[in-house]
Image: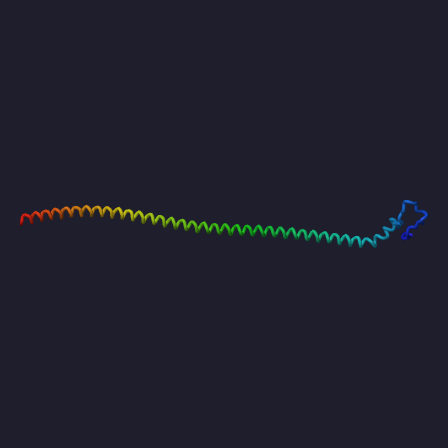
Length: 157
């Protein structure tokens, strides 16, 4: 009888102090006989375990892929921000260069105008000096003519 339970021992057969438990005896033949009934359950449990492991691995791979995509997106955002920053700096540099060039042109025109004004002032000073000399000459001539007129009046009287 392959499925027969193991014979039980009476309490008188158990040695004092050992306190053996009664366990059914399972033979190899019993295992071979039960294998066709247990095998589908073992296969189902193995398949379920494999499915759970694959699902966990798939979730892990999805998390890694999402994290990688997130890092790539962050990197692209940083590159885009850096490029926008560089464009802002470049436009600011162009604006500053134009402002500098306009101020430089303004300074050059002011210096030119100042030099022209200085030349006119020198010319005017020369003209004033020349006119002052002429006025002095004319005053001397007028003084001489008055003396002559006074001398004629004094002769005539």
